[in-house]
Length: 211
Length: 163
Image (cartoon, rainbow over all chains, first blue to last red; front, side, top):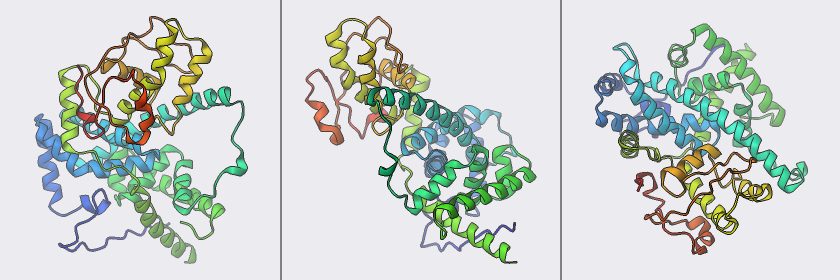
């Protein structure tokens, strides 16, 4: 499969939307990021605030795509920033801030996802015990296209979902994605290929014109 | 050729659709809050600033308070189910352990086990007044309970300090 990266020009008078992939890939960002990470290593709290201001929207958007829950996404983003503070001293000069942060976030998301799954299972049991009935499937509303996409994303195995989010929601290269997830580039490519095939299949089953 | 063209179109469409989907994410994680959370974490054992955990704790406390006060003894399993119902995902978003930990951190209860559907174990929590204020516009009716002592502002809930 050929990948098609779309990079739209960003005019100076039209700043990118906060949290969008383009917001974090301006040319002079890399040197800024390196000095921010160096400050984090030196335990400078102002650097943590700057990282949170700059990457907070990105982290919550990625967490939201991964977890599908706004509150959990907010928690995960904040937990990831605190985890980054703890992990900063283990970074080196070669660490690139954005993939490193996103890697931490996705680890946090995995933890949240496991917790959410266990909790939903418990709550379902409690609900069934209390209500004595199950929801009527005929009352389930028709999904709109955004919901279909969210569902297709959630149906992916977690490792594949992470690859899709980084590659297509964050416009990260195969190399950056591999760095963030600690994978080989070949693994990223194959997961991406499989994930896209499954998503396409899933979306075509619900709406032939999707996404 | 057609397959490649279709793949490219799909990827292009996916990028745009994911971007739209991500617009549903909250946007209130900022430097001030994260540093405040870090300061609290390193200074003392308190809530980490998780808004949903604190809201969950408050709602659960409001719901469970009359039960705990009236019983004055270990709740029966049926009572526990009432608490579990309040913990529906649409209202609360955190694990029982996290909620219990939050309740303890902000000093509302001394000890409470919330492993739904398990029965909470004694000792029962003693009501403890807390000095913040609460503004729950979205569930104003809950505030009619006179047993609820204070208010924690939605806007400043992340900055709430443990008493």
